[in-house]
Structures are given as structure tokens and as C-alpha cells.
Image 1: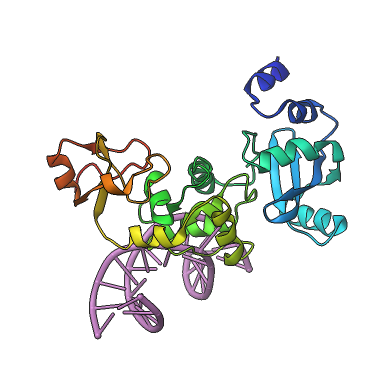
Image 2: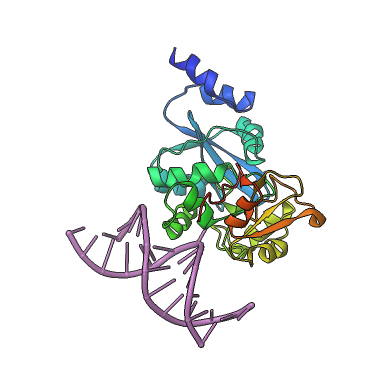
Length: 247
DNA sequence: CGCATGGCCCTTA
DNA sequence: TTAAGGGCCATGC
């Protein structure tokens, strides 16, 4: 019964499901996969993906994995395809058992940031109900065990600058460029404080960085200084980027 | 603009 | 128990 329930919940590619459900002990499995960051080691347990790491070779990876997660991990090349698909953004299960509730909340929100989209650290903090914990959000993302799968590279500073990244800021920039995110434009948009945007026929107002949910056409953008002005036009907060409801 | 500073919250040693 | 320090932020020059 347990296995049936698990099977029902898994939304990962079929090959991955098979592998994950094949209970062959308490040892995690890994494969070397190609990614936008180059070759990376990706590991999984029965519950989902546990780690995405760079390492010099297999021995170094196995040692680093044991050091960080306290678990043994063995190579399984037949997982390469499924794990690669997960890296590419396909829906896959993730095993975050090593994360505390705060970290998990941060990662859960970060995971829902769509490709080609960015969000500020401060936005994540508000989303998890801890608007003051901005800095701690950065720390939590720094320890993201599954970068790319949980796209922490899409979290940037509130002024639109890129911010730090576990694999180095330059790689963060190129990942975003690969998703057609124009950081220059992002920066320009976010330079205006307390300004909210809406499209011509939209019923809601957004943070200016809400450009994936709402591809504003330049000629039809309406800008509001403060949300009171947006409310005066009968607009409601965007259900995706959740701008404030009241001042 | 760019830079420095104090503040903030959470984790770790 | 405490203190230090981080993928930050808002201010104030």
C-alpha cells in the first residue's frame, strides 16, 4: 500500500520513477549529467533528488557527498536520462530531508520561479511570511543542495544586480542570459522604488519584475506610484507576484 | 550613480 | 549560552 501511494504521488519521468521505486537498500544513487553548468554529479534517494554538485572526479564526489549528507552513494548510469531531464526543469521529486523548516520554506518558494523569471531575495522573504529575514534567505539559498533543479540562480538583489552564487556570480549571470533574462533591463525596472506596473487591459498590478507572468508591451505599460494609485484604478494585486494589498 | 554603515534573522561553532 | 558572520536591504552621503 505504501508503494502504491508513493507511485501515485510521483510526477517524475517514468524511467526515474522505476529507478526510484526499485528499493535496493539505503544507498543513494548518482550519475554524471550535462547541464548549463557543465558536467555535474546528480544524486537521488528513494524520495527524490538529493544533490547537484560539481566535483573533480567520482571519488571526490562520493567523499563530498558523504561529508555533507552522511550517506553512501553509488554510480548508476541508467539514471542519467531522468536526472538530466530533472536538471532541465522537468517536474521531479526532491529529497530535502536535511533541510530545516526555514530552509525548506525558502526552497519551496524558489522552486516555483519559472524559467526566464527572477525574484528578489526580499520577495522570497515576504512570501514565506518573514519579511525581515532577507539575509537569512540568502544564507538558505547558499546551501541549496539541488541548484538548477531548484533554480536559486533566479533570485537576485532588490536593485536588480545579480548577487552571489554558489558556483560564482559569473555563472549565475550566464545562466540567466541563457533564459533570456536581460539583467540590464531588470536593473532599470527595479531602480524605481514603490512603483507598480500594469498592462493596458489588466485587472491587477504587479511588481515591475513580474515580467514572465505578464509580458508587458512597452507601449501599453501603466505605472502607478504607490499602490493607492493602483487601487484608485480598480486594480487588485497580481496573484503571481503578490504585491502589497495595502500600504 | 557608487560606496559605507547599521540593521536584521537564522545558523553554526 | 553566546557570538560571529552570511548569495541582503534601506538609508545617507
